[in-house]
Amino acid sequence: MKVLLEGLLPRLFPGWVDGQQFLCVPHEGKNDLDRSIPRKLGAWRIPGDRFVIVRDNDNADCIALKSRLTALCKDGGRPETLVRLVCQELEGWYIGDLRALATAFALPKTDSPAQRKRFANPDSWQKPSIEVKRLVPTFQKISGARLMASHLDSQGNRSRSYQVFLEGVSRIAIGMGYQKPS
Image (cartoon, rainbow, N blue to C red; front, side, top):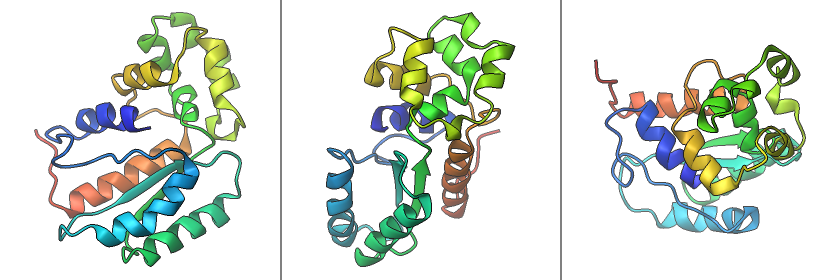
């Protein structure tokens, strides 16, 4: 997730620089993230900073999971934190944009009408990582995230969780005075 966002956000928000306009904080899995949310949010001392928690859903109850993560943010003194769930795994965002997947891996047949029909609702796939591996046998998570960051678009991705994530980040950016360069 960190690798993808570090490459994707500056592309979608021109002028953003990692470590200046945004900072991705990695965690060693979901349990580490859950334990660290209240502690890290509570310890953050830079006024005006905004936070986004983004995490794979991994077939959990979306409403209960988001509610629990929101409560952890509140416990950390940051109730305004944006919580977004990736349905079901990050690779769901990839099968949501088959054009980007085909371009990133130089596999034009990946973006076919049959595949677009098959993956019409990418967020409904329980294990999109398996589907990405079927489409791109050489796929590896880290290098794949780096490649996909260069090709995912803000428009046309069929993953609703991707669109909701981008809408939320855009709202925060605009609220903090971001203006897209003309």
